[in-house]
Image (cartoon, rainbow, N blue to C red; front, side, top):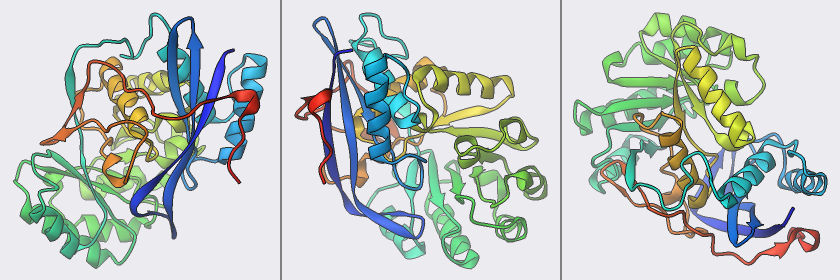
Length: 337
């Protein structure tokens, strides 16, 4: 298999918080696959706190799979190689055909901060035109979360829906106390608020809000315990945590069979992968949702030009962008120390 690799390290505008720590740059490997005169690209960039593999492990998995013409064991490597193979194909699937019909896709705004930060963001126009806003909760005191949520609800129009992301930080009792003080009609869904995923249905019943799964889908929870459970109606799919494009399609299909909507997101990936996932949303029939693909603004630079987001809509260009990196044959490639 004709494969070249390029290392990238792109800085965040400010340190990106993961759990109790933070990182200042996004590191990864871009895969380039050549078939005839066509080049295809895919990103391999496991992120601490999201993926279970490291970048070194993903690289080893990638080398072994290329050598044996097999699928990598590590999900991030499987996803990146699958993207490179598909985009190099003469007849690519998943909306990767080039050129493709020009269109756009709904994107949710993203906010992680306090009530004062919310006022600053609103004044700066960061919420302008967005129909949904995702707010991080569970990082501090519930009373502060409530103040932030209510501040944003007061600032934006009555038609704007709020998504709350708890990253599995709360007990059932704490989450119920917080959510019961919020108008459920303004909430699109609550994403993984609970430490124990088994209580999601009960929380939904108590507060009258839709629950969404993310970590439970990606981190080994028995799928039958969460997919299609009462009140759990949305799945957040991060393709690089799933594996190959075919496996991603299967997850979306299984969710649909169980009556669940899918929102696509990334693990803070580059704008190249965001462009691919935006096309996948259209191809997989979930383009009517607002998706979690607005993270390019977190970076001070990128491997391709970010797709513009205007009033909550991401423009999907006619052609896929090409990563601006220096590639090396896989046999000669090494990660920086």
